Image (cartoon, rainbow, N blue to C red; front, side, top):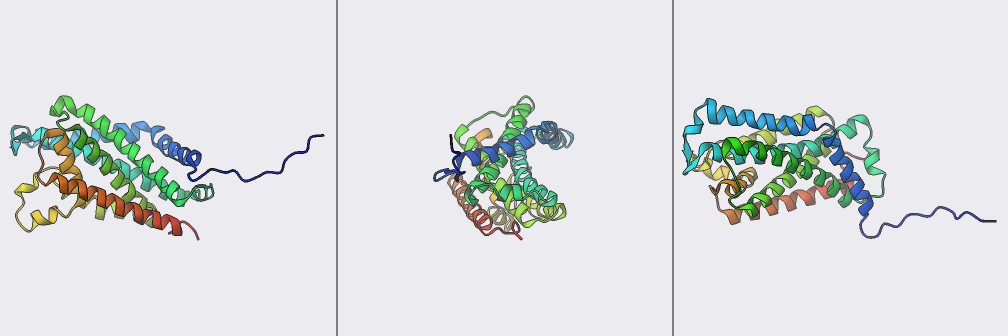
Length: 267
């Protein structure tokens, strides 16, 4: 007679790769299942901004630092689409889970705080890069933008997506309802985005606003990406890379700390 063995805890090793992959795949499937809203809609929005600033306002005939305004504007719109969608993916995932009471599904699986954070952040990065690629491909015929320095473009696209994905995690942890999340968007994300040189060159700003702009991390993610696509940068490229690395490291450590103590996740 065969005697059934009692259940034993499953061993995952140093990293629960299966659980991490499962949570990441869930985050990606969540936005791909409504691709018309999460991918197509940002493309339309970016094209509308391009039409208004470069065509309706006469910007198509101007040049910024020797770069046609359309080619100057397009990289900023691409990287802002990346950032906005990376933020939305992680922030909405956490707030929806809180509001619906399904946050326990995130806390109960055998995932460490680092694994939970990695899966959520990478899901946001994936959405940001997917949307950014779609926006770039659609803008190429209108703006004539290419890839002058692919390494810089790829680094700053990924760094921008990661930065806003981590900010989305922090915003989602802090927010208890969608009104709180809207406050983060309206009072943090939008001001930093519009004051970062997306639609203009910061070289035209008088002091002290030029110095203030260079303390905005959004400036460096846009400036570096613009250099990668159009070959023009307002700031020092090495400083931009260092700022993006330092900001992402700081945000990652803070988010990991909040996950580890269960900030606004555990009663």
